[in-house]
Length: 301
Image 1 (cartoon, rainbow, N blue to C red):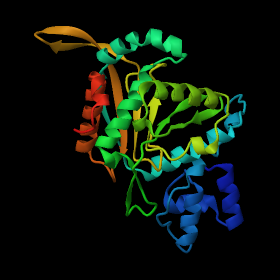
Image 2 (tube, helix red, strand yellow):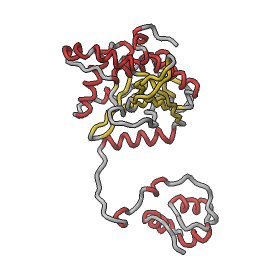
Image 3 (cartoon, rainbow, N blue to C red):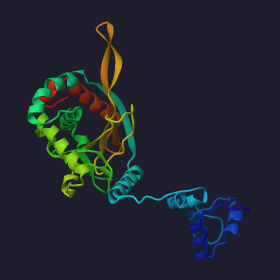
Image 4 (tube, rainbow, N blue to C red):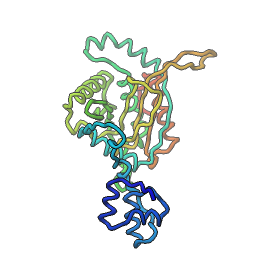
């Protein structure tokens, strides 16, 4: 019988005194993993019983047996991010809601600030408006500004608004946090984004500048794409993804108009947030961007 098993599985079976060929005949399977050996032992040597799969067998492959390869060590930051994302993806029942927002008013306002920005030495990007809109939307929808306790039985509501900004760096993904974003003006938020992103690239961020966020933004607008599914960054309960603004036809006032619209991708923990609340959240958020004057008014729905 032609048995398919990784070298580590064969070694493990030999150490446990399990004959893989006999096990394959007993189960009628030719592809075996470490969990099959464990199940066989747990079943007293008879037919295997159900067991949790050993995920490592999918990566424990001699790739060089199939052709030339090179190896590149994962950086420490990338390893930490990998562990966090793997845990999040396996533990959180995540759903993503998609919408888009009219950016005409934001882009028009940005143009009026160009000269003042040059004088201040600060560039106002669209991301600064997104941070401001998200901060105010979190105040309007406090359930999104929360975290579950480890046992999943208590929701911790936060009376502060700290926005994480995902930064793509050569050494891995980093998420510095803008503190008290709901209390800051547009110029300060823009300056914070520039400062934090620059120090992230230079690996000059301190540990306390990357924790305690209310919610994070993953912005791919400068690269491209029309939609994606960002993974919730625990212990947060939601994350907002942004992709490149695109011009789409919109029917208004009896005619079609070309309108710059930014795609919005809101992933959320379904244990805390339901679909209707996610839709209301993005509707409120889009309304703020469509009319930035709403951002200076008292929060509300």
